[in-house]
Image (cartoon, one colour):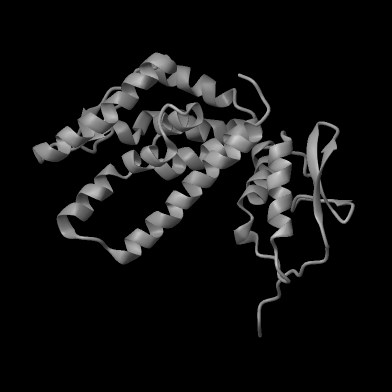
Length: 240
């Protein structure tokens, strides 16, 4: 028995201004989230992107081809209602940030981590006011409590749409600092992804590529870029 799939029922999707932001209408009817909430997004650019995703659908609806719509639904239905819990979960990455755990050997890998990761820790110290310290090995070493509190306050201050994007940027990279750097455009998003993959790249150089691992990494990279785009769409037209 074939799986039932929702079918297209509209002719045109249109972004429109709405109280509190923007929404999308399908043949004049407003789009709702899966939880039946109004789909109100913070920028016209995001509404246009969502409308484009709906317009691009074929006869059968493919949610996998609608990343902006999915992220907006998550922001409204989930993150907005669990903001403190999501923010704290992400802030906790600071105490085990990828960039802080360094190899003991070989010297070439140690040097590559220092060269690629230290500048981002320096950036965080200057831009975010929090100095995280690198350690050697994989055993957990607690970070300075004041630094973690400084970072946590900044995560908790994010609105639901920013936090939704930040969730994927941090969880996919394994680094709170990389997530902040992506939002701040401290470095190109493609370069930040490569920085987060430094250890995997090293292993691939040593042992050769694993096609399954490469496919998995490619999906994660696509989601990482999509999260940055979602953040940029949310901020479009906003100053500061």
